Image 1 (cartoon, rainbow, N blue to C red):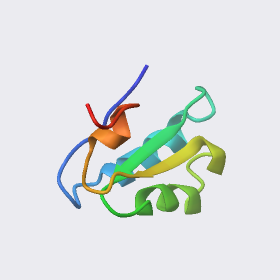
Image 2 (image 1 turned 180 degrees about the vertical axis):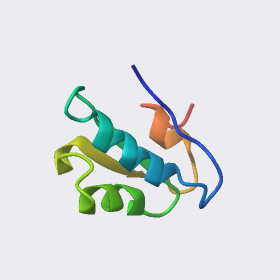
Image 3 (image 1 turned 90 degrees about the vertical axis):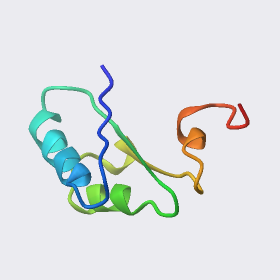
Length: 76
């Protein structure tokens, strides 16, 4: 299963992700991929708060192009 969480800045997406990880990590094999234009801050927040093991959290910096986070070939 794949779950996508979207919303405006400051709406609680990362807090919701943390809560879901804490609630589900002992019952399911889960990982998190975060994406942001310039930083991996959300991923770092999840690591600091021990949402999952650090190797299960990946922060992708898209550089302003969200396609780099979702496609193997970002030129498409």
